[in-house]
Image (cartoon, rainbow, N blue to C red):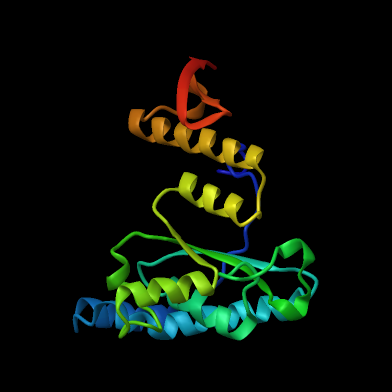
Length: 205
């Protein structure tokens, strides 16, 4: 539906897991109250899938997008250790990088719960040290997709025009969800000021 209604502007690759690997964490979370630690095998499996993608597409770099609700953060940490990340703290610009410099361009993690509660390789470290490790690994946390777009722009992964497009669409999606209107009944569109990303006004569609 998203693709046919022109609301999906690219075709991402979903990293598949397995039903068997997911059922056990669900059981441990609900019955045994083990919470985030129960999802560790799923994170390791996702890391292995990323490695498979890197082998299947040696000419490509990878960008990983997930959230910190289950095991995506752990997968991003493991992938950085295995494949290397180009845009980590102190890294160079991706356009001058070579495959030997790393296969991951960046990882973007949607913060759906407090960072200190998320499953991580560095759970025993203080949060400040964990955040330093994440910066070094090119792992960027975000709360909104507008923030994610700005972080991608700061890493030179997208240009300013792309940030404006993402911001505009995020505002439109929010209004559609809040009003319950379909795309065909949406009567107003956000007009983003390109000189001030935090400012917008409304115009007729």
